[in-house]
Image (cartoon, rainbow, N blue to C red; front, side):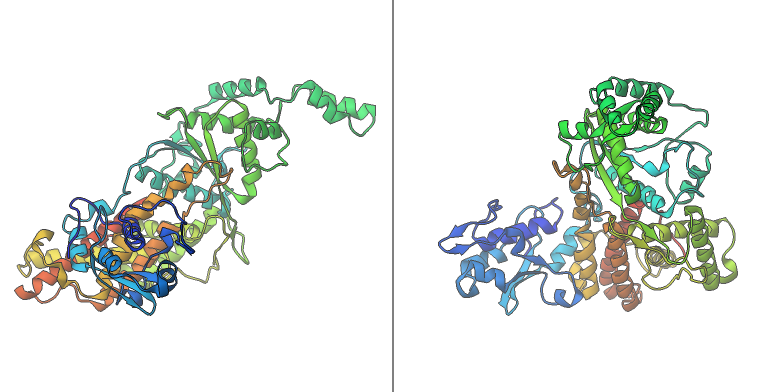
Length: 573
């Protein structure tokens, strides 16, 4: 039964909503989450159904409404025939086609019309599944305090691993938000040809630069003047009250002399009177130093090109630097700036038994990657091509090590020099890049077969019978990865929209890395089990071409996800 609206990409969320409406006896979306019908309380719609994901459960169902949910809706959990009919005839924009359903011990099981779903996704190349379902608007400034001069520009040898984590996170968030349609800029601007820029480029990070002799003095003077005229500037009377307690008269006079001409701002008054939530109550009064003014001037520069009146500044900082960054954020507000400010705080990076700078860590991982490659591929590991491969694989290793964990949690790294970076097994970035390369190798082999006359060109998806895709790994790849990816992209910008949530923002920044590792495990299992390029016999071509359509879409999915991590795909290993 095909009930698919043309040009409407299949989505998990609309399907779950439609299933919930059908089960509750209403075709339209249900907005009231808890209603009483006599003494029976209706459960929340999003809890009525669960999408299955494990290979074991997907053998007999794709969606499940558990028995506990059915018991809250119907006496003894018995689903009325009219309700079952609505479930089985499900349709709507983005709704997956239903092939059948039955009530079993665990609940109401629904199975998707898989051949129809394969055709709907793959017939047009799956392009709609590789991007967010809708484009957002707005301007986001990603501010990385670890890169601001204090007073000197940081170097790879002064950058800590915790600070490197914040830089990689800012870079990743920028790519993700751009994909969603946001205009993104980065702060601070760094001197071109500086050691830190060379280091960042080795990791694939394209950070904004300016000539070495460039200065931001005009903006610094503007910020200084705004703070001097701020209503939150500490007055002489407030300063007198603060310095009057304790000590002898001579000590007070000495302190008054030292404070003369010093600019201080009452940060507590700022966040109390401006209604800013989630800031540390101990911020108090802050002395405005030159590096603070420089920091604010850089933020002013980064927001200068925003095409909207209200931008969002996302300060990506380590937990050690969070208090200082809150001071900077409230100072910026005291200068009269009203942009939304949120703080993405990272947990520490631990290296038991060692203390490494960012430069030492990158050097260690690069050396281990080169050694592992030489052990596997021998003397062929030389020349520019292999230098580029090792650079990208090193960057992948570093990114997955530092970005695969929830950003608020600590990361513990194994940096023992006798350890290695394995090119085998599900170990993060290397494993992901290796499986992406396997897809490229597969299609290279197919193209060589076409050149030799063994295989014809891949026909359009509309000409194929996708019911030939019966292997459980094929549905797993479509249902768990290709179809949900668009909604995964949608989620990441939603946290920025939350009003009144406080200074901190929690975003599932680890999702793309975890998605790619899980995808690679399931693809590797499928690829090791299934011989995709079969004998060049006409009666086998339909199944082979269906599989090639699926794997071509999977290859583009890899490219799309890796691009959000600013990692180019490795096409040959």
